[in-house]
Image: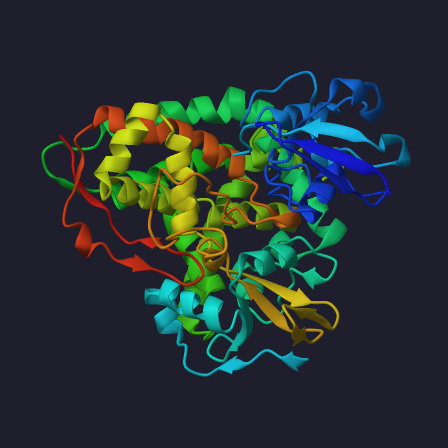
Length: 107
Length: 391
């Protein structure tokens, strides 16, 4: 199973095993990662599963869609070029080892 | 395993007046319990309410035995699942896009908020429920929905009639007769706007829905607007009043919020403390289990987000308003596919505009006899008045 590492704002690292087909958001919720709120449960209607994709992985996760980028306008923390809604990153074998950084706040 | 225990003692009157005492006991003693007077199985723990709402395949939003369809004269998106729900919801979402909020609705609200605050009298007692919170919520909603000709009074009257009808579990005649009269007025108001918005489309909900390339049936356009009217006034109204009450009864917290400017935090805490929508229904599609309790196919579950927001596992002294609370993740906007469509609008307008504006205008605002403020409601909840003195 692909491994995903979440890095909290104070540099705490948590690595979890994720089921292929799940989103990064679902992997976070399933493993009790603090810092991913995901109010809307993956419907891309809130902006509370915001994360920053680690630079090394940006080419593999791809870019946010226009709708996702628009929704990121509602993110509580700074939006950067690496910002994504973690519900929109589907986990594949290719993303085994993915590292994402969590923002200071989601609300 | 066993089915949920049945509680014969809890009354609707208790849940209307002081639900939090009941929920505290249920969280400790029977977090999955069938309440005879409600006829539903209540979930009072945060993990359970969230899990049910996030699993729409197992828990349908269609609670068939409610007066809602009768009251709304329609089967609305609130009670639909999957693609049926999503199609009707998506018909309205363009109105609530981030771009529209930023360029249209937030600036409109800011202007209205200033105007409504200008009208408030100083140096006398004024009740902010009818003088500010209700009409301001009504006005911005009328504009966003595309029926700006509806007066604040009409919007509030219709909204209350829809709420009273949908909550008319005793199927009494009066609430249905009243809401039926409101439907006639609302339909006339909307139908008169259709040709105008066909000729000159804008970003309002009515315009976006009727001018879509593949529009939903007009019956559902009406139903969507009425859902927004039924839910889009009391929630911003009650949450604003709740936050004001919380801050004004905790002056030390208010001082700190004024210093830090974290009005959004104060707003989120108000939503957590007294959720404007306290409970929602879901129907089990299959036999399942929750927290070791068997749930039968067809059983109606109530997720009590009001209780989830006070869950001792997540919040210390959850019964107290504390704007300085470090973490206020709550379930008041719901979760899953029915997550509140007005979330971003509420956060931007109440959390970022009206709260700082009102305290800037009236820095020494005082509650008048806060002990006399009555809190009311089982499904929807808020203070029935908020008398203040403005300087």
